[in-house]
Image (cartoon, rainbow, N blue to C red; front, side):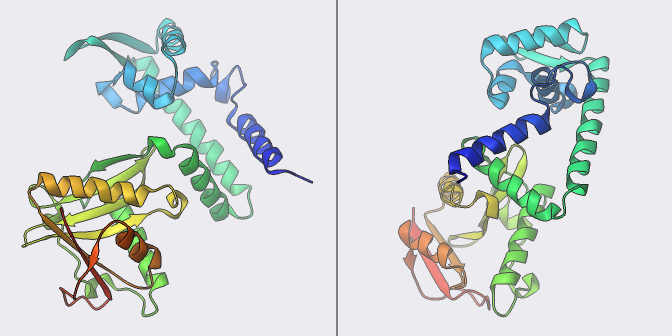
Amino acid sequence: MLTDIARIRRFNRAVTTETGALDDSFLGRGRPLGAARVLNAIGQAGEAGREVGDVRDFLGLDSGLLSRLLRGLEAEGLVTVGPHPEDGRKRLARLTTEGETEFAAYEALSDIRAEGLLANHPRPRALLDAMDLVASALGQHRIEIAEDDPQSDASRHCLGEYYGELARRFEQGFDVNLSRDPDAASMRPPVGSFLVARSDGLPVGCVGLKGGQAFGEVKRLWVAPAARGLRLATRLMDALEARARALGMTVLRLDTNSALPEAVAMYRNAGWQEIDRFNDDPYPDHFFEKSL
């Protein structure tokens, strides 16, 4: 009988083989995966470069190993490491012109490999969903929440997924044009706020804080299916409450629908009190308030 542990170990071996973790020449570029990942982490920052400590934390490397990998990339003429211009106690890593060329080559080859993996699978969407689930689970402690513009690409992605889910789960469907959809300006500082959660740079959750009225209103709380069960919704709400306090708000309100029982339960468990209807939105049937 195939045990759970055996299945996990098979998965680990498959990923190690597919990613070329043991290859001396990752993607045929003449250096192992570790050096390629350091090059990629620096390249993602663009011309500004990346602080060495940030590279270490991002990749989860110890200082000694990172130093050795950086020295190797410097010897190849791909990276320069020098004092940070704003803080002499820190070091800044930048790609050289040759490093930028190598970074672009890795990006192109990685895209080709990913496209081939999807093309060779009979259920590419299911494969991607499974990958999202694993990546969210393994990287749950590295999910970052930060303020974003409600009309940024990441925010629009989250909101589009949110609206699509409501359309599937509401018996009557969902049309955002019929909802009391807050204008983006009401969710920008100093009036309101919009928070996006990212896992390795990819958006996996959001929540908005609508200001400009007698109370702050929580809007559009969404977490990607692959990241659910990791208490990310609670983290988003905690971060939003902190932001509301910073903006001087003392009372928050929100509404939701009984077709989202997990949301109703979360609000009740988090100390929100049910109140009478406070808007004319046709979709919600539960209304909550919380004093900060």
